[in-house]
Image (cartoon, rainbow, N blue to C red):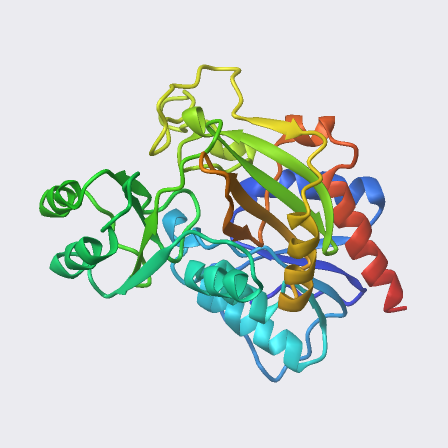
Length: 331
C-alpha cells in the first residue's frame, strides 16, 4: 500500500533504493519535499484519492533482474490510478510503455525521422525461430548483428555475433537468457567510430549535458550509476558483456562530453515533447561509416557522480528544481 501523506510533495515511484541517494540529497539541498514509494507489489485501493503533489515515475525496465517481477505491473496500475484522479505525473503512464519496450522506442524514434539501427523483433522464439529469423536478417550485414531483449536495461540479452552459426551454437548451449516479455530483438551491429557512445541527458525536456561512455571497458552494459560499477560478490569492477578491456579499481568509463552541439539534440527535444517524456537519457552512436544512430531512450535516467560534478549543471539538482517548480505551480 502506498504511504499516505497529506501535505503536497514530490512522490517518486521506483523499485531500487540503491539508485536513490543522489536524488534524495539533491531534493534536500533544494528544499523540495520528497516521498519515496517502492513499487514491488502490494495493495492499491482504487476508491482512495491519491495524495496531493507531483508524482514522478522512475520505474526501470530491468526491475525483474532484482527479483521485482511485479514492479512494472504495479507501476502501470498506480500511474493509471493517479492520472484518472487528475494528479500531475512526470514520465507517466504512456512514458512507462517506452521504458519497458525497445520496440516502442525504436518505432517512435523512426517515425520522428531519427536514424535507428535496422532491427527485427522475434516474439516468443528463443530457439529455431530466433536462428531462422537471424538467417534472413543477417544477409549483407558486414559487421554482424546483436541480440537484445526488448524489455532491457543493464545490457540484458545483448550479445554480438559475427555469423548466424555462432548464434545457433549459443542457443544450443543455452547461452542466451530469455527475455522477460518473450520479445527478442535482432539488430545490426553499429561499429562506433572511436569505441564510444554518447548519452544526451534531458531534464524538463531540455538538453542538460552529454556523457561519453567507453565501450571498450563498458561493453553493452552502460549504466552510469555508481551502484552499477562494482560486482557486490567480488568487490571488483564488473566486466560487462561486450567489453574488451577489464576495468581496474578507480577507472571510469564515463566522461563529460563538452561541446556536443549536434543538431540531433533539437530533434530529440521535439521527440521527447511529443512523447510526453520529461526526464531522459538518449543514447547514440557516431558510427565508423559516418552515421549518427540513436538506439535507446532511458526514462529512469541515472547519473555518474564524477561526470555530474564536472558538468555545468547537476542532473539530480536540475530534476529537484524542475519538479519543485511543478509542485509550486499547484499552489
